[in-house]
Amino acid sequence: MSLRSSFSKKALAYRAIPALVALCSFLALSALYLLGHKDTYMVILSGYGIFPFRFPFVDISGSLAVWDCTRLGIDVVVHDPCDVLGRPYNYSPLWMAFSFIPLGTGETGPVGWVLGLLFILSLALLPPARRPWELVLVVLATNSTMVVFAVERANPDILLFMMALAAGLLARGPLPARLIGYLTALLAALIKYYPITLLILSFRERISVFLANGLAMAVLIALFFAAYLPDITRGVLTIASGPYFTDLFAAKNLPFGLAEFSAGGAGDSFSITLLGIGLYGLLVLGGALICRRILINTTIRSTLSQICDCERIFLVIGSALIVGCFFAGQSIGYRGVFLLFILPGLLAVPHVAADFALRRLCRAAAVVLVLLMWEECFRIGLETVFAHEEIPLFADNLRILVFWLARELAWWWFVSVMVAFLLVFLAESETARTFLDLSKRYLPARRAR
Image (tube, rainbow, N blue to C red):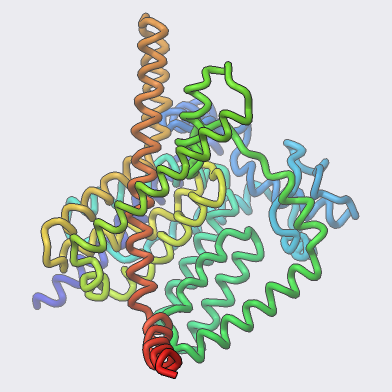
């Protein structure tokens, strides 16, 4: 057996194993539920730190309910009576345009199950790990609380994950394939807004393609707003925000949570908000300093171009999605499935990095990523353990605060690292380099005049 053949078989195995483990778990849980062992099903999910609804796939049920009510001529933006939870539909009204598809809440089970199956199978298309300990991290990530939560709810984010995956794969092809990838990214954005960050990939194009593609995207977005602006406005106003101390991840959790905690319920809302804004500014400054240190003290700029194109593209895709969601608002834990795009790139960088600092940084970021994907399991597990122990109220509150602080600081540090990778990608992109060359060519000429 040749060395190349051995490596290819190893890569194939490392690519398939995480998806295979996730598939076995998915099929086992499906069998437990269908065979009537619902108590065991609930206990297992509770062990993950998940509190399941009374039936699986409740989130896709809500999306299918939108189609049911739309076919009946009911306005679902403020209230959806077809939904089991009566949730308003606060995402893109474009989803309603697909109500001609003959599916509704009656098909929640089959639709949710097939969607979960396709998502799990799609994980085999991600770049593989290269070493056994890296494979362990990937398996842990693909079977984490965030991923299980997304699949159990059949949240539309797993559909958007597959669309982002398709955009990333197409980005490696010839120009027609790449343009289809940008259209796929735009469609994902028109369904749930935040995937607009996927269009960062277009910076890889030469400037003429970048400008033409950007103009086409802008026209399509303008047409979308012209057709749906009233519904978009009403829907956005109903997007709810939650507490700062649960499974929601966001940039505002730490500063405004600290402001709320320091007030102890005694301060007025204006002073709490003012303190939160001040803390937010300090955290942004701290994140900027972390980025600056990474860019100056490591070989990140030369290293990013050395990893496999597929690993680099998905690292950028995942970073853009997570950073965008982190700063845009609060995201429920299942949106962390996009962290799966980042992990292969983080694991690949140490194989080519020339300096120890960058290798250590990426390995630490990979471990933090996996811990964040499991953090709700740890939080709920600690609460369960301490609920059966007789400990002083002060000690219990201190435990909650310390865990929360560690989690939020980990998010800010991790996002700062991802911003550094995005800045390097943009700085080294074809479009940015062309703009820089043009500015060097024409700006000095104007000054000379």
